[in-house]
Length: 370
Length: 240
Image (tube, rainbow over all chains, first blue to last red):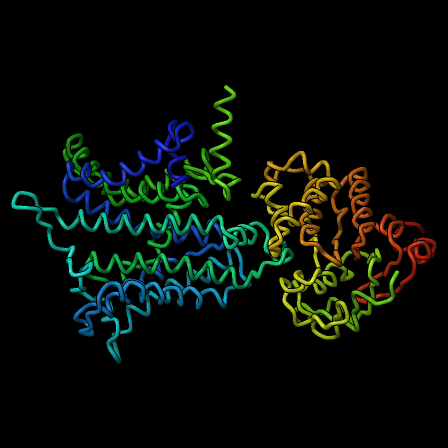
């Protein structure tokens, strides 16, 4: 929370407590504002929450431990397919979500260790290539495991996945309060996802300032030196992979329940790159930056889709540039400008990241001195 | 000087794949000694040091620390027994502050009162470092970074300190300061094994020294004797 509050312009450094409430208020009110522009926007917000979870999970691996992972979406896939296997008519298993979601998280964590073990001695480019391969292998497996025994149902994917049922309450159905008000399930999903994101943020912040977080920072900056001060670098790297994967797995499970449908094409290399782009854009290693990056890069293409087409039609009477083309173009341009103007991202990780309270104290001190 | 060796290498070989970088060396350090290992580029000095610290595995031979075999022990466990390495090229955590770097040295310790006391001791030894506690370590000068690296190693309370080329890339004046620090560390009773290319300085500072040449130890003796040795003077001190 601290980091997010600090990231609020102007207010953050002066009144961190007020800024914190602003962040909470925005998070809670977001879908109510979004719905004014149409229900689609609430749906986009739901997806944004899933991407935030993915981004903070990947940030743990790349930003904290410095392990460049280009196949992160594979863990999202593992979580989603685990959910699909255990809660759909596909195998006719319908376990409750509080069993299925942890199962997905656990499978993803194991997948993380499976990826981590053979890559322990790799760094940088080499690690990136192997993780990229891993992501593709998972996707290709999902695509082809429909014969001789049909496990994943191949490219058709698995549908009719059970929705989230929280202790008997099916949140995919509109909630009726009295006779007048019905709350669309998109809102309910949003708040459930928001709760998961909030929990993840708290967990990751605790992790970052823990011994484990410091060990990751050491490995990221200099692996040999990390060994030399007594860090078990092998275990710490495996832990980073598996914990990062866990967040991906949970996010994947929620995605499966939300969509009701999973297929291999949702887990392409481009998705891995999109998540990585979010954290680079937002500010690698900084939780607030990563969250803002994920929100911005989920919302931007959608805004484009709804703005670019009508604008072009109004100006040229026809659509010259397909929004999908525009999206890639603008995203690339945004990245180039970011690298030129703010190479450390929108909200850079501050050096004293392990003790945010120091930054607050220092900022307060500077203001007092003025 | 006591006669129980704190560190013993017996016919130690280290290989990178098929290439043997250290071809069977014997080395011995008594507790409290300051010993240096000198030699030309590629002689295998850094490899030897990394093998002792456990960041590299050995392919043959025996490594004894405090009389116990340690060759199977991973690096992080060797540190817990008091064997600390200051890696070549300083190896500080560039994105952490100086203070965080130092505190990372005590990563394996739980005795927080003693850690604070040790921090004060390190500050007393390295006044320059104390002035820059809140600075990001990557922005320090080379000499300051080296001091931070040494200070960090000291915070693990080592019995044996392995120093890999502390003078590398530093101006002569700074090198002198670094060596003063090393001497004061030695005066506290820490055993030191120093790898150096700056043979002149290393030999002046050390009680004993080993000369390494293409993976083997070719000469050994007291620092003063080696300094006077014409072969050493010719090979390492630039005299013809």
